[in-house]
Each structure stands twice: as structure tokens, then as C-alpha cells.
Amino acid sequence: MIYFIVNGTARSGEGLNIWKQVRNHLKKLEVEFKAFETKYEGHATILAEKICKLPYDEITLVTIGGDGTINEVLNGITDFKKIRFGVIPTGSGNDFARGLDISKDPLLQADIICNSIITENIDMGKVWWEGCETPRYFAISAGVGLDAIVCKKALTSKLKKFLNKLKLGKLTYIILTIQTLFSMETAEVKATLDDSEEKEFSKLIFAAAMNFRAEGGGVPMAPRADARDGLLSMCIVHGIPKWVTFFCLPFLVAAKHEWIPGFDIINCKKCEIKMDKPVVLHEDGEYCADTDHVVMECLPDKLRLIV
Image (tube, rainbow, N blue to C red):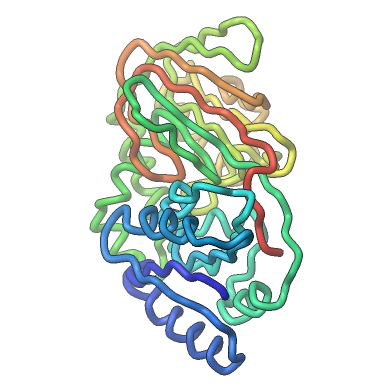
């Protein structure tokens, strides 16, 4: 039995069409499955919790949706050891699928999920902040500052919906990044990475804890990040005038930013950040809070991915 959690609204409704193709394909293959369609924000988390409570030693759970749906499902899993996790990507960004070289062909990916008995353990991240009741899991990244503000805006952006219809959804993040860069406030930061001494970063533009190399529809924040190495790659941009940062953006998009002063990439298992003012925090593009104190940590080999 394979359990599917389906977001039919992904990519402006294209997710439902993809699911219909996959469903028909599964029926032709005579695969036993049950599918649950999400009805509202956060529903995928509730569905994943219910599926995890089923009285089986091992459960195959597949998400059909974008990075936001995947994030909701991961935060609903209560026992990662018994879950075999699969993804058929239908979102506009698909950073999770891109980071793991998951096929864009939904029927091919369905075949892999149905026929493979192999799983690979990959890292996940955990983030918590001052005042949060429950830490959140993330697969791709978590961060404060510019990228978090952009993610927050993208969640309700009419521009994103319009560009998705034109199959240009990736441009949303680039346009919003340029717009946000010149309007945002920077922060003064003290960061502790693993057990090292506290470091100060002045005029923080953003700090992103990367489990995969790219976020925001393929922007390679940490070109050498690896979800199998037991580490997060912290991309910290600080102390650079905004107009200079603007001219650095093409280098960031081309993964050629590591040599630029003020673009620091540091690998660590855990990072604690304290800021002089509340700053927007995201995980996997989902808004968490405005906070001045956040901790991000790598969880090695947490997720069993069907390969």
C-alpha cells in the first residue's frame, strides 16, 4: 500500500492535472494506493500525522506537491524510522527535487516509487526560536533576513501566481529579492557556530542555513552544501552596502559569490543567532516568525528517501 498526500493547487492548479495522470498510471499498474487531497493550509501536516499512526512497521508515504507541501508533510511525520518517503514534484520552485536529482517526469518518478525497495538516508534541519512552542523541521533551508522576507512575500504574491501561469515562477524570487533588498533594514548579529566563540556580524542582510545547495527556485546560496554530510552550510551576507549587494546578485545566482568579501559560507552542525531587532524567519520558504533569537541544527540521516 502506498499513501499519497496530494496538493492539487500546486503550480496554480497544475498539481491536480499531474495527480490525475499519476492516478491513472497507478491503476494501470494495479498498484494498491490511498490518496488524500489537501483542503487548506496545514492540512498536509494533519494528514501525515494520521498516516503515521497506522499500525504498520513500515509505511510508504508520497507527497505530490511543491516544497511547501513537502515541508508540511515532514512536520507531520511522528516516526521517521518507519516512513519510506517519496516525492512527485509539482511546485513552481521544486528545490527539494532539484537538490536530490528527483525526476521531473511524474510517471517516471511514480514508477521509481512503486518499484524501488531502496532508500537513502538524508539529513534534515530543525529550527526553533524565542517563544516557539514546537521546533520546525526543514529539508531545504532556514534563514533570517532578505531570503526570509522574500519567502514571506512570495506566499501571498499575485506576481507569483501570474508568473506561474506563464511557467516563469522562478522569476518571482528574483524580482522580489531586488525589490526587498532596498527596502529592508539590516541587523546587528552575534552568532555561535557549534562550540566556537561567539562571532559578530554587522549589517546583516541575510543568514541562510542550507541543507541543499539552492533555495528560492534554484538560487545556489551554498554551492557545496550536501544533504548527506551531517552539516548545514551557513551562508551569511553582512557588512556590504545594499547597492553593492545588488551588483553581487548575478554572482550569487551563478554560484560565483564565495570569493566576495562579506559573503561567508561556514559549515556547522548547529548555529545560534541573536539579533538586535526582530527579523523575519523562514524554513523551507514558510514564514515562522519575526524573532531576534533563533537556533538552527542539522539532524543527520533523519529522512529515508525512496531512490
